[in-house]
Image 1 (cartoon, rainbow, N blue to C red):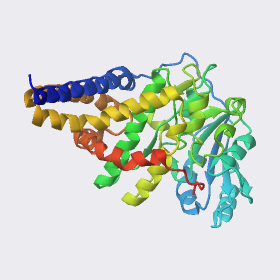
Image 2: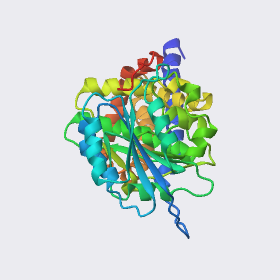
Image 3: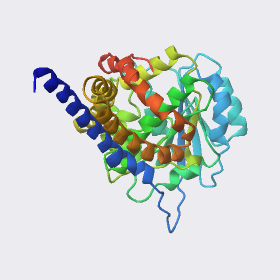
Length: 374
């Protein structure tokens, strides 16, 4: 066997190994979400809840979305806290008008910046300290609960051992390929953090729909270990505080939140670059798991193409088919659970797009985060 044949065989073997890694993630991690069923409780208990929303110059979003949090059907004591973080728009006057109708609305007006704490962490910390109740439920000003039972469904997840509940923050469905790519990326991220949590390795949550107890926030000294990083008020805190024993997920469709997706590629890339700047601060074990998956995902299609052209197209297609079958079996029930099944016919095309996605957003991991959250 000459050198050229050895080189071609090596490429094929590497392709097989990368495929094996990908199939492992689907059949060990992601299948857990596909098979997940909410356990029925023999007894139910309702808990007082404090909903916290931080807003800076979000008057337009508050008009659209805040009523969704204020008209929740929840008979137990609850409050909605809006932290108005140095807004220059009409947020103050808008919130005053809301308070006339909704007595459960409490407004915290911040008039000074926390100079050495960039981003959203200072206003969120103030909101949590202000909260009257042990369970806090977080969302953003540009999010609206998917139903009037959002508070009820999210708090139902708690039991004596639970301190963190990871929810799903979806995006509104719109026409166009950009909307599909945004929703796929959101689904793909949720597929990972929800599946990892079910596997006993929770590593992040999203601030659009996240709940935890005040006691775990104060026990971990809030955001002090990463106050210098503008982003990460959701994922870095969960990365530090979550364990396999204290974390649960909630994928009830009534417990989702919905956000308006970016309308332009530039807006979306700016948002994602900011979010990815926190990944390098995760625990080493989480960085390894996430990095191995992303690297294998990134290399899969170039190695497939090389194997098709340089080795044996029949063998290459067989290996490709194994991964495709694993994807097809696992993704459909996951998409159905997260109400994204309209993306299923597109999954192969968008999966190929993910090669370019990694090229676009990988540099964000190494960039210095911007200091402002708005």
